[in-house]
Amino acid sequence: MRYHNITKDDMKNGDGLRVVLWVSGCSHCCKDCHNPVTWDANSGVLFTQETKDEVYEQLAKEYISGITFSGGDPMFYPNRKEITAFAREIKNDFPEKTIWLYTGFLWEEICDEDIMQYADVCVDGPFVAEQKDTLLMWKGSKNQRVIDVKETRKRGEVVLHCADYAPYRELQTDTSKNILTGGLDS
Image: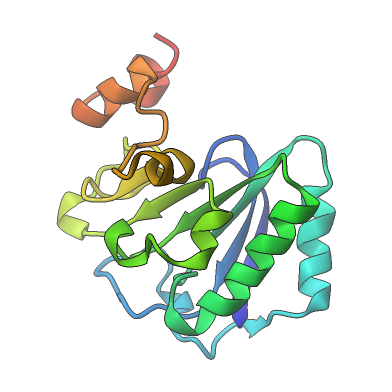
């Protein structure tokens, strides 16, 4: 597996402060993708033990909420085995940290993948430029879903992350509200 970057103290790709691993390889090639440089599976640098150590150093910090796998696409077929193994290691070594996974695949296509045993949240679906909305939390276009993986697996139906939090529900249905002025604090 190859990757492009490790972002530290990220606040945009999941709740809390997070570490983000931007993997190489994506077959979706969405129009107006924010990170097309990561599409080529041969781009970036090799994921090594030193890479794991760098991620672990960040995860050991008390204020870091967890890790987000993005890219590219962590669920790009050549990435799945290594991402799953890494997610398993993280969950074993840092059980209190959450794991977020961004993918262009739909939940229904990947829900039975082994990584879902370790993931807490999955943002699914391709980015659709015509449905882009900069006011959405944790996703770029209206077709994407921010899925609570544990609850979804338990109930056998898609459960959205923060679906029970009233301001979040309101934002999901009325995207004309700016989350900074009319969303979470009101």
